[in-house]
Amino acid sequence: MTRDVFISYSQPDRDCAFELVARLEGEGILCWIAPRDIAPSADWAAAIMDAITAARTMILIFSASSNQSPQVRREVERAVHKQLSILPFRIEDVLPSRSLEFFLSTQHWMDAFPPPHEPHYARLCAYLQGQLQVPAAPTMRAATVANLFDAAELQRIERHLAGYIGPLAKHLVKTAATRAAGIEDLVARLAMELETETDRYEFTRQCRGAPRV
Image 1 (spheres, one colour):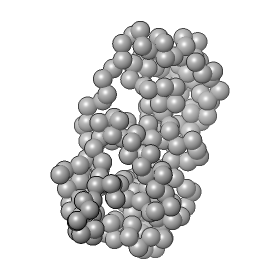
Image 2 (tube, helix red, strand yellow):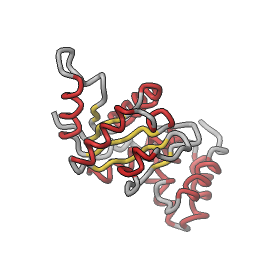
Image 3 (tube, one colour):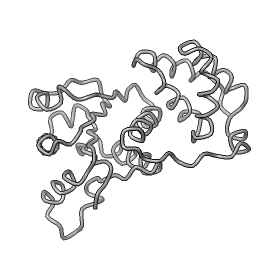
């Protein structure tokens, strides 16, 4: 079965990997992840290789552990061989080992630290929806948005965003609020509108001071 995303991870990062899968699939992005998607009678290695071949992209949960994992290295090698795009989702501030650097040196990276992970998950969802052309989740009714977000909270976030992009911030906040599942998701969606990782980080940090409903 074809899936949008193959999730590559090492065992110590299992909780993060499955948390990410739940978040992606909640946005309509189909994932393949072991051992969930390996049939009890299937050959483990063959199932993984077939899943990589069928996927549209690979998300590598990159950490100190996956950096040293022979299994992760084999999965990355297979993905490169199949010309599958790879997005390292870096949950720890580590650089790739020599065994992985050759395969990942030309890849786009997405940093997923510091915690919490949720804003980074939301940013990855938005990125993949654009890259894979997955339809966004249905927009919420205006009444639902009004109940989910406080008007003063939205205005504060809008002011922070306007400091980076000007008057366009008002439109972006209004649109994002109809799609976001909560305040962290809203901030992460808006952060994707900024050009640099530094600006995205600073904007997210500033918005965390906004009161929650």
